[in-house]
Length: 158
Image (tube, rainbow, N blue to C red; front, side):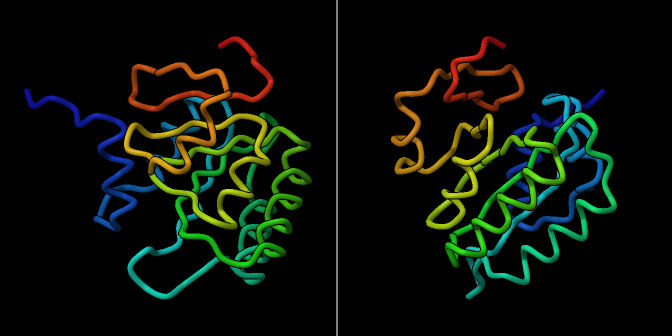
């Protein structure tokens, strides 16, 4: 019997736009954090950035989602427009009644950092870029057995 691929490896494959079953991965993330998981990735390879149309797209997804337990946004982006990031945060908080977490498997730069740090809790992959990692040094951090690191600014216990 072949060994199951580690959770973080599957997530990183998805970031690299490999052909992985995204829905199953989001379901597993949702189980781990106890919230509905929604992915929001922008490319680091092509000239794209967070803009206002992304806020519209996320709102459409959230309107069709069941969020009674809250929202977990899986975020990987080089950034973009600050006002669009703020609108995304407002939309996520509104539809999740403020129960809004963020998973950052690798990178959240610029405006994506604004989104990440407005979540109630953050989960970081073990390969997160060093700049974003330095921003979390003052936060409580606990490594989960699935390869993600839990971090919260309000020092909640797991």
